[in-house]
Length: 342
Image (cartoon, rainbow, N blue to C red; front, side):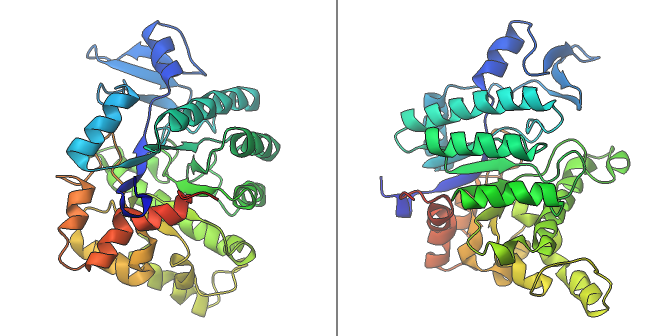
């Protein structure tokens, strides 16, 4: 497989097998339990909230999943993380450590058995810096994981908090990639986003942009220019409203920031998936950050993919050159994830 020309999905999700086995058997799993909804539907619940039962599509074996993705979505390499409601930041530290170890062990095993078709994006207990550093070292050195999927806040704490920045810098120092995905629970203004699926339509882009700028304003990217940090859903709203941040800088109102450059400069230091569902928006994102910072994202097995698939969408984009399409479809992910080796 020529990794330089493969189509790489940097935004997909998987259900840990332990969860599927234990919940199907009626047992709890790291704080998750199976429950019945008011209409008799199957649900799963943890202390943070309740979500739908894992879909049959997502619960397929990895052999079936890889085959389906290659045939139906034209995806060759599947970089995958836990669902957005399963980062585990609400767990007690000891439980979170056990949870992360189990998930990371499974991801590493899947990656080894997949002949290059799966890249496991591990999970870390970000609520505790010491636990994060210990599991990070194990996951990178012993398991060989090359990247980690993380949420966009830790129990309401933004990514400019020094104790979180410490963990992010440790991931960078381990030469691992970071792929940020908006948390499902605990989004800003959650009480106002209950109707019309606004919690997803508005809340997810808001979370993504807030995480991007929290990291930028923290100064992390000045101290660690080699950082490979990606964000799903095109980075949210921030690329389209960056002028407001620049205005507040010019007025001296964004006090406390430690970044060395204007906010818009840092947009070009992140990677983004292309899952923004609008060609005009994608054109602007390319102009803001460059085609060399965009990657494929599908949100598999959920409902966030482009109709007809993200790969086909990019291939049919008339505003992109052939070289830009090649970069977005796989070349940039090859660099982001260091698929050719560290």
